[in-house]
Image (cartoon, rainbow, N blue to C red; front, side):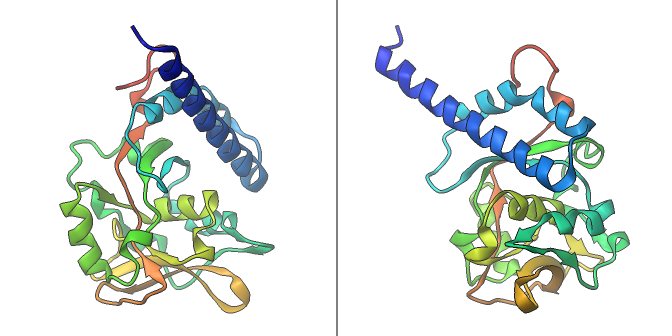
Length: 228
């Protein structure tokens, strides 16, 4: 029989996750406005929070982040990345060149191209600060985690203040050539910039974020039990 203390701890954890979910929806409303996608996300609040509550997520990791829009509209996504009153922009990256190589091993990648999804257990890149994308890719794989795509690092920057601490690589994607990696940094006057670097580039102020898992909303019923 579950003890009262354990139940209270689970309830408190779930309440904290629900507040995180609500704050992320509020952020999206502020930056993109209300719409059908946000209404759809709200129907999964219980599922997403219960799923995260059952995971063992290390201290300092973000339990989950929504990935709502895809790389085909980078010019629309980047202005949703704010640094104070400065809005992000894209610099010398063509959407046609982006390849999300992290999905190459997926049997069916369509749910992560055509539908909103969530990334869980997100490490913001602090653990791999100073490591080149080439080295970070190996370390992330050894830890049985997945590097983030360009859309996912944009989502990370929308829903956290990571850029105030360090900049981020998207080593789950490339820019048409395997060694050209998308990244986000703060440019002149603190404007968030989506650019690219060579995979062997390293700097103390850049890191490579990763996640523990991804789940597309297509895999969840709108009503009923969460996917375990």
